[in-house]
Image (cartoon, rainbow, N blue to C red; front, side, top):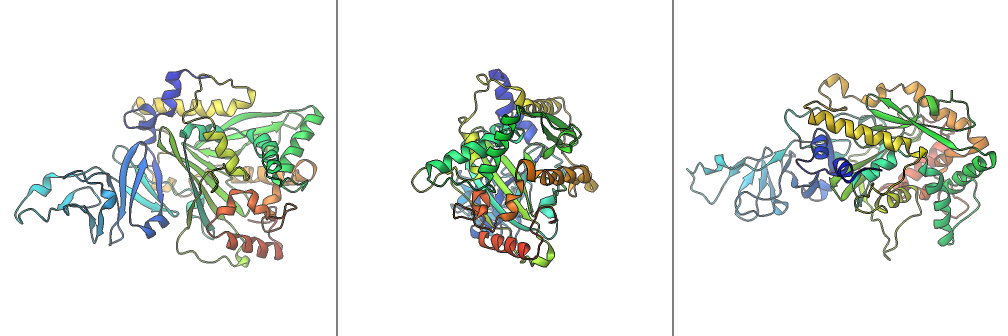
Length: 465
């Protein structure tokens, strides 16, 4: 458990807090680019700061303080002009640097505008997201993580607004063992209450439960250790009766790219490739993104995308009931189900929490580096280092982890159910609908592409690239 002071150190994200100062050394996604297509001026909140993002009529992005310097009018009601954002109240206009460039109600020879400036931060677009940097200058380079830039992918973005602190999300990122019950027995119970539980052996909920039943019958348990690397860590796991030469133990799985990006790979030879990002909005709210880059083989005929579509999904259905019958929804309830900020003074960590403890220690260490005047990990200054940087992890070894998991599936579990996304389960719905993919804006296209891949004999994860 942590003390109250330690918990505050790790959870606070506002300006001037140790954790907030660390997080301000990184670029953060603040909005899906597609959202600006619908409305080019948007209120955003990031790291406890309220700001306004705009795209002017020259297509330039600006991120400025929430209120006009004149009479404090909210600039989310501003007007995008050819070269800036005009306050709708008296017409003061600001450029992307925050400088006031027009005061149309003042005398033509007035120089007052040269003295007025609002806070502004650098912004860039990458991978269908708008990214902002709120830290000290000079700004580091925005890393071009693999799935944001790789060619040939069919991209979709799904977002959720979570009423909880970002560290609850990250505790889960480091926690491999949660899937055994959360996506197994809890999933079964959820469907049981809905009258939808089946005995389908290929379903995620039954496969996970069967795997745990096999452990219990053998009298073994899963064990975990962190595997550190230059970008953060992977999580090593192994059943206690398995050979420790298994790459799930020697290499680990699912890299955590500090501070909060979870990668499923790299080097995976699967169609469904994805990131999860838990973006700190403030101390009690997190914007969670599931970023998909489906890598169908070229012969499938993936359509061109003019932009990356975004869909924001509520946590509850129209009747106010929490949505729990898909994998990510179960993760999320485990995060916000701990309250706005988990009281870690009351928790009791066990051996299965080894990687959770390791991530918290990494966070604490990086906070201290910044306090000491240093630069934390994953702050990039060298242009040669920002191109798909996580591929510097040994892709052959990590791909071997993925391959061996598939090869072991016949005897212990069936992790390849996602290659059957386009097929109907025994419950009467597509296997895809057990996952958050069911909310993809182009869901029907994703299903059709899986169907074509299957027809061409390239849908199996062992052959997809």
